[in-house]
Length: 116
Image 1 (spheres, helix red, strand yellow):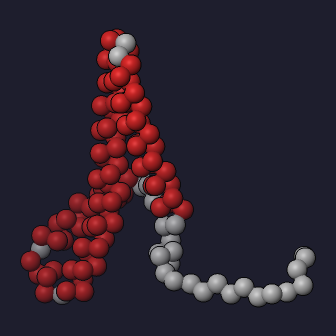
Image 2 (cartoon, one colour; image 1 turned 90 degrees about the vertical axis):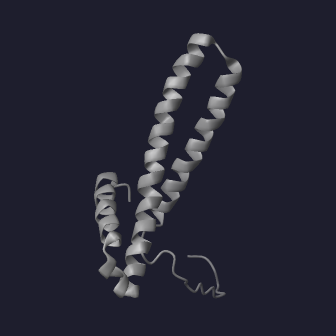
């Protein structure tokens, strides 16, 4: 799921495909390409933003240490917790990245004697 380079390259190709006016003559194909773009954007753009935020946070931490600013440190700590939540969300999505994962299923529980 986290093949960033592959997803970034595919996103560039998908963006070019979406710019092709002939694509819109086939609504099913256009919808599939648009859906793929959304999926790629959800990974590539979020990871780009997260990377930039982490770099900014690192620079801010250096300033906070120099200034010994506890209030700014508390704000930075809150931001880092938000970044952690984003990473945990990505990990959850990675666990359920199989194309069949969002599909419905039936769970059948049958009473029995128990045991092994």
